[in-house]
Image 1 (cartoon, one colour):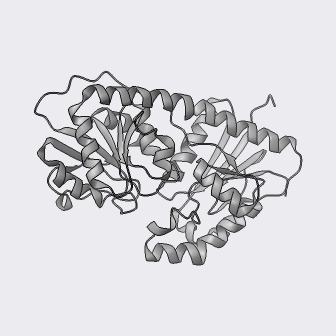
Image 2 (tube, rainbow, N blue to C red; image 1 turned 180 degrees about the horizontal axis):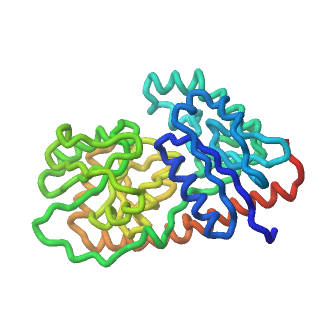
Image 3 (tube, rainbow, N blue to C red; image 1 turned 120 degrees about the vertical axis):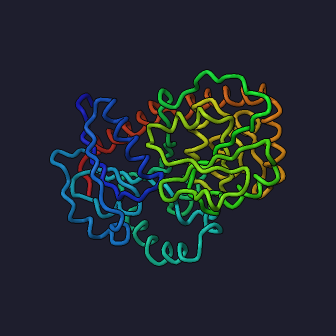
Length: 343
């Protein structure tokens, strides 16, 4: 198909990785010569997604692309609907990490909306293999695998000065201060590592760290614009991802693209993005002693840090580049359009 595609990207602003996905998808489609139309809705629409059925689709739309929590509301006659599943709430690896209220919300409300979106979609996409595999088994229908990606021109290594002897080894944690993300591990890790390490904490889109509640050896960074994130990565020695569950390891990928070694638990999305021993040092889940040991390995061995960082950069380019993901989405859009009328 030679002409530009008009892709409607309606989304609820939820303060999550799904927001990042929409922004990156729109940017990538525009760079590729297509015409994305992003339409943001307030966060309160998450609790009443049926109200989004009255949203006006931009004229001339070729494809609708939405997330699973609201996708059903954007189904329009004659236009193919693509639904990307960012967080499959029925994944058995995710269920143990939900809080009680979160479980009730998912099971009593979100599940029915997600089911409707899966049924309404002309094509379903998962962002990781472990998610796609479970969805295919549960739904008994095809699920495309298109990994999330990173702009490897923006997230790229910079020359690093030789580490000054006596200064702490700097570990960066990026994410909401929740147990799911492993924030409860950080104070324990800081105490065991001691003064030779500095764990710098940058809150995610939904929450920041309070300096008053941090243990010795931890420091809170001020929130920054997403465009400034590469500079944050460049200011540290390694990135810490003790998350207990990820549909996709965005932070690990950004670190790898910047040429940094990753340290964390070998959990779902992290282990799929990273290669233990090649781009990262990953400990078994809940093995804090293992994290301590691996952190000391990194701090004591600059050659190991450099090797892991260089391999991570190559893996990010080879497997998680913007061009690779965008080509897959555009090919999917074109195949749906060519298949004829929908809905």
